[in-house]
Length: 538
Ligand code: FAD
Image 1 (cartoon, rainbow, N blue to C red):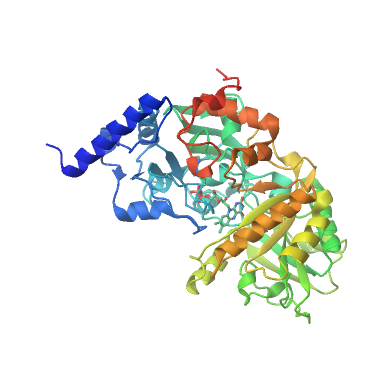
Image 2 (image 1 turned 90 degrees about the vertical axis):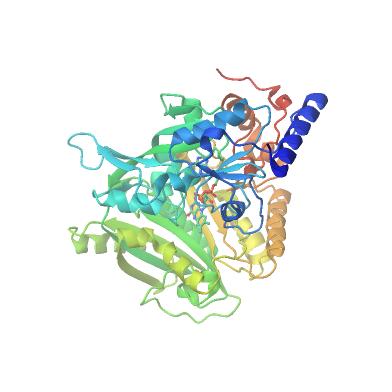
């Protein structure tokens, strides 16, 4: 006999399907779970609550169940069950839940907890090298739910490391590859998506496919930067290099944005290792504080303190621009050579005379620097608050105007969090991938990383105001970690040609539109009419 709850649930499912059959388009159903995953799927309230929120802390959406897969086969079983079912159900991978706008949520569907694939006993990080190679021909196979910090610690044990990073390492491989993975190394080594050789992906039909530039290449390029739309990444093969041991870490202060960005653009033009130059270039904007070293100010929590950084008398109206650069080296490198190269490079820059700080740190400490800021914010109870973040890619030709309109105008000193601004080279991005960047050769990554202890809607409105201001002035920004809710906005984000490619790939790899619906690119349930004008690839 059925319990009253089960009976009620079945009645609702039958009713929903009857309505679906009658009206001729899919209706979302109350999900049933595949019997053979009953051990792995939970609906306990703690698990559902955890899957209902994210770092952004501004939206809460409950799933009906959480899958804790033991292997990619469990993920494939789940998706294949819903793919074949008459009742479409949302399925979203959740990496570390560091999205801002609910991108990993699955309303009334199933959230796949990717971290459960890799508990402390079950790491899947395997380093391989071609015989005789010394770092130049090595790669690491990594599970999609591994954190980058885990990848760093595992690979450096072999004296190797991935070539390019995010600023913060407590993000999953699958989560950042679904966006791009950008940090100060990307001007030279490309974003993380440009450093992937191969992946295993469970697509929206429940098939486990290996893809690379030579095998299922449309899936490979689609998934990289693909916002989870075509499949769940369960393994990625990532290029490695010999891990540097030390970093000479520099910070230089400016009060003139034009000089600051000119110097940044000069430094990122030195892309070839043989040109010398820095291995890492970023920049932060600090308003009304005491220079580029103020770590006491909550707005500035990401700036690690530099012991000997000079104090600078400034008024509340001063805006500081802090150029950050890193030069990698080995313990065995002659310190004089590092000194000479850094001296040569800094002598060509235009920071305020004397306003330079420098320290030598280990490579691991350098890469893990933002974690120190996190620990500090956590201790002050400021980590788990709403985060109305906005990241934009801004064409270099419009960055001065953007600066005046946004940093000097709209924000008017009310920053409430770190502001980043640094240039990147477009030629390090492969345009076959799904990630979208401006058409100019140099563009800036500008991120307003704000925390809202009070009214997060105020900051969200300010973000919309920034987008409107760019629109009015025809500054063709592209949103990174995009969050739009209307089809017309997504079409504009991708542009006509890329939108058509997106539809083709969606029709081929997730034709029922069940994956990563939290991105809100497609309606759910997905009407088949959406593919009417797209050519479905074989
Ligand atoms: P989640 O938030 O869990 O998921 C993000 C999206 O990817 C969802 O749509 C989800 O369904 C999908 N997804 C997750 N796992 C998979 C998978 N295995 N296969 C397919 N789809 C999947 N980004 C940068 O580029 N550079 C930075 O320096 C940077 N720093 C950050 C610092 C902090 C403190 C935070 C909160 C974010 C930062 N980000 C940065 C943004 C970050 O890269 C994205 O938010 C990323 O999605 C987070 O990864 P996650 O593992 O938490 O993904």
